[in-house]
Amino acid sequence: MPARARARAEPTEPTKRTVGAVIRALERRVVELENERSRDVKRDAAMETLARATDGLSIALREALETMKDDRATALREREDLREVVRAASRAASDAARGAAEREREAARAREVALAVDRRVSECVAYVRDVRDEVVGLERAAREAKAAQGELWERDERRERALDALESRARAADATLRDELESVRRETSRVEAAVNRLHEIENVAKDLRELAQWSKKTATYQNGRLAALERVNEREDKGASAMSNQSHRLKELVTMVQNTAETLKAHQARLNAMDERGHLVSRRDAATRADVDVVKRALGEHHDILVKVCETFDAELNVRAEAVAPASAAFARLHRRS
Image (cartoon, rainbow, N blue to C red; front, top):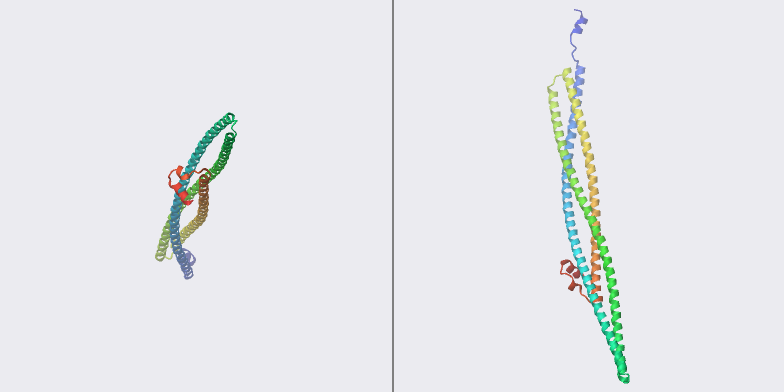
């Protein structure tokens, strides 16, 4: 057999140069895999830190929810107390109106009596026309009776004007209280919406914790694959078939690592969105607290208005509001403030 044919029949063996290049490529790849594994370890530590921060945020949100529930209960109690005070004031106003009507009837009866006295005086003047002294005395008595009657009429007019002014003030206070109660209802609905939003945020935090656990498990699985690949590389032969299998496995591993990196980026974006939502919720809570403070100050001003109404009753109509109003805790607190 010729030498050329014998060379064709014999298989080509790898030279030292090709074997050295392959070994150097494998060493570089091993270094790259070790670097990637160290990055995975750092990423796992960052994910654990993020999970702890998420747990702290959930606890803070629960505490804020309990505080908002307490504030809502306090607002409801104050609203019920205010309603009782308004009812007591309205009952006192109606009782005062009935008393004024009774006094008007008494004044009418007094006017009828005065007219009867006037007729009697006229008869006496006709009867004792010749007795000048008695006529003069009777005329003086008639003038005094008319003056007293004029004073009674003026007092009745003053009381009617005071009653009209009091009714107008009570109507204005009632309208203002209705507006404030409506604003309290709106603020209550806003607080309920904020509570629902907090529940949604807790659910999202739970999903993020589950995603972090899944990422950790994936990283553990990848580390296991890398260790297995290193063991396989140590045991494999130096032939061409072994090199092709190793390159195929390395490509699969690179693809898996890239997919994991993209998944972690998506998780980071979701965490950033979660932080932004938390800031928005905190700003809304601050605005809600400011609105509740405004409502409380307005309710205090309405308490002052009711105190002035009671003082007007006492000064103009000589009626004590405590005597006609029910002995409720809200009404007693109102008069203690006065």
